[in-house]
Length: 415
Image 1 (cartoon, rainbow, N blue to C red):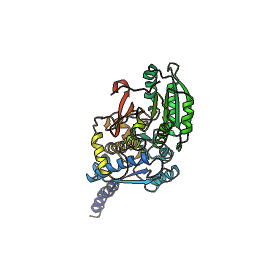
Image 2: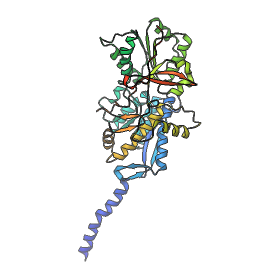
Image 3: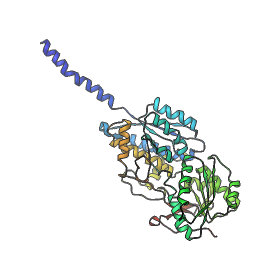
Image 4: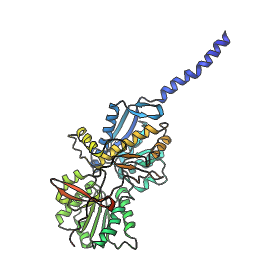
């Protein structure tokens, strides 16, 4: 009898051990760690990303949580998002806190390359996979298996259409001399380097007559504009963040200088913010990137851009945060998180990475086709070249290049 009793106890041991292990493996919530800039120079690009991500978390929890393949069930989400106040020093401290103290399951960087730049080495040191919404600096993806860019292409790709357009349509229209002004950060500095390489090919027909980098916190461009004008360029390419573009375009209006081709980044990315601060006439004729805020993609996962805009504006009415591409970027990031959880074999960082890369070329959202290169840099979700024109109290953006995507003809300024 004693022997049978002992055998019975032994038989129960695996079951007794199995039940608590399984219970421990299925967490009560999935913790998403994130930073946002509630103030400072990067708030205008950071807050829309945060609110787009938060909207998805709220929607998902309202339906019972996100489906997690590893546990074959829906699990509620907990968004832990700290305010870094646009400070890289504060951001570094908070990224460490999310990893070491909050022990988040998924780590999402703040918006833009400046505030992402401090997350990259911290995440790599802790072997924590970094879900990068819009930090496009090319160096982030060098010898780094712990990152993927989710919502817009790597910086080296962005300016290709500018260069191709100038070498094609621009040269035919008599454009020969180019001025390049850029803010010295990972986002625009990388673009300037790439653009310089694209334009300096022997067959380009173009000459760079002005090439100047300035600090990202530059707020007055009057002297710089006068120096550019003295170089007598046909085309001026200004690469900066939202605040840089607003200051540059305002100062340009005041100066009275005109150029045949003028490019700025954010009229096509945060259009409402630029219209509010520069005015439709100040944006008239400006060439810019065209994002998914102005292109109606047919998503296979999540809402269309028009549907999302209604959801975002309803959820954030009175917030003072302008709708634009970065809101889409935040929601796109959320959809990637959703699909990652739905495909990952476990919540280990290695399995999360495998799941993200497994989505490459297979995921289509309101932001276009999600596609990664082998290093985690985004090479899908392209940004064609467009031109801004006033329309009523606002503006419209016409795609002018590449030609197969064009919705209108470019209009160059008078020689």
